[in-house]
Amino acid sequence: MRTFLRLLGCVRPYWRRLVAALLCMMVFAFLSGVSLGMIVPFVNILFDRGAVVTDSAPAGIAAVAPSAGAAAAPVPAEGAVAGPLGSIEGIKESVRARLLGLFSADSAGGALARVCAALLIVFLVKSVFGYLQTFLMITVEQRVMRDLRNRLFAHLNELSLSFFHGKRTGLLISRVTNDVNLIKGALVATFANLFREGLLAILYLAIAVWISWKLSLVTFVVLPPILYFIVRIGQRLRKRSVRT
Image (cartoon, rainbow, N blue to C red; front, side):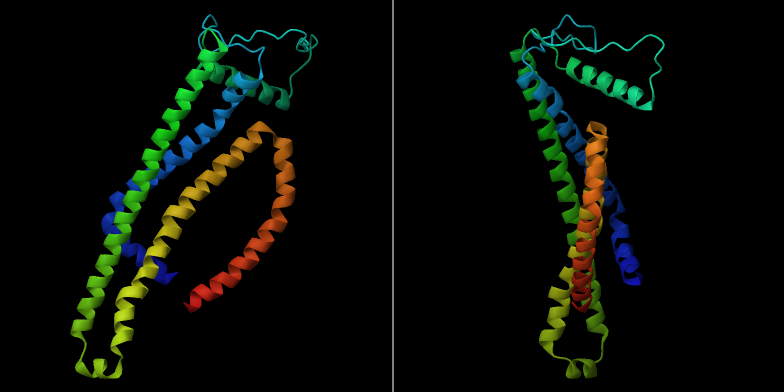
């Protein structure tokens, strides 16, 4: 932990770029969730032939024409009180209706064209922010490595000649070149992978629970044994990385 805190001290001069990279990661994760959520209107327009979103619908609400032979939606009895699950389903239907209303058109083809255009825009913007966060993280990594190599080189210049008589030249060069490269991996694993992948995991988990909390519970049953094997493998890899 002490070594890691010293590494964070090396990143401190470039905290603005690091914060900008983290913000880009947050936008990237958010747009990843948006692109996943846009599957709902896409699938509705493709496979629900009776559901035609029209421009005549009120703002934010999709007018859906029932298909021929489709059963009418059940109407709750008078006096029935909606429970928590009923209210959640109502919120989900409201969000779904508003999402479909964003792509309202006078025909299914026009609605599909709008969904495809929106998907292209979302993926384009997401790719831009993904590139920016990668660019910013790489600049921080390279500048930290440059500073460490400069400090290490300056320290070597201050050592006595007896030190160089007792050390091999190849070992000293390896310290300056190869060992400093390990810092880059630590930075990537900590800031880029941990932060970005953590945000994506939380976002995707929230979307999964939103779509079907019952299937999400099934996932939670399968997850513990998988995590057990991952932890065991991680412990072995950690021992080898410590040796490195």
